[in-house]
Image 1: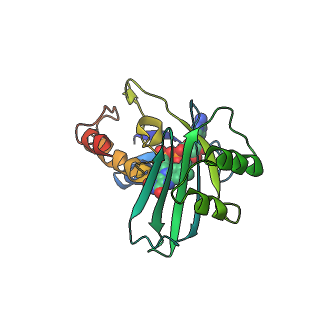
Image 2 (image 1 turned 180 degrees about the vertical axis):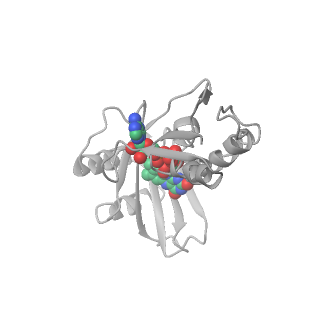
Image 3 (image 1 turned 90 degrees about the vertical axis):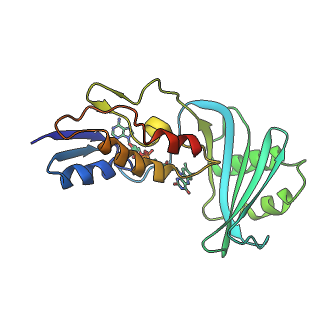
Length: 201
Ligand SMILES: Cc1cc2nc3c(=O)[nH]c(=O)nc-3n(C[C@H](O)[C@H](O)[C@H](O)COP(=O)(O)OP(=O)(O)OC[C@H]3O[C@@H](n4cnc5c(N)ncnc54)[C@H](O)[C@@H]3O)c2cc1C
């Protein structure tokens, strides 16, 4: 019986493990995090983003709005069937702070001169219970696989936070990987059927 080692127990790891088991193979998943991890991407791009939920006071109807002010942007989308709004501020930043008060101060400073509804949305930030802040990172891979080792999910083809759908891509990658991976061998290669999806996302 084939036995596959999978590194990472988030989205792209358990999905192929499920299907390998379904097709009569064994899969062992290793996960370095002891619990749900608060961290994010790794390679700095000198950009940061902050996101949180608030009331849908802009009355967005399954829609979103973006306001671009030079090199920074304010984005707000209806969420949870229009009962809430999801806010995202993106801005240039280096050496991002690691505590919440300093992070919110950095966001306020970056958007202090921005008009539109930025100040209303900033006012909602301190009371948000799901405030999340991180720096943006990107690693460009020349290939998604080598020999019998393949990258799926964010490790191979991470979506932009502005496009979303990273979880879908992680699951879809498993499907296309399997479609391009005859069971007699576990060697993988970038998938012809997957690439158009990533290009459009
Ligand atoms: C703030 C935020 C909001 C998002 N919102 C959405 C959204 O609304 N919709 C959406 O579809 N996507 C969203 N995404 C993207 C989505 O979370 C990712 O695309 C998805 O989690 C990718 O899954 P993955 O399994 O490929 O990678 P990850 O979720 O990054 O999982 C990788 C796992 O591997 C583990 N690991 C790393 N190194 C090792 C090692 N050496 N040994 C063992 N284990 C290791 C890590 O601990 C981790 O558990 C969001 C991401 C962020 C950060």
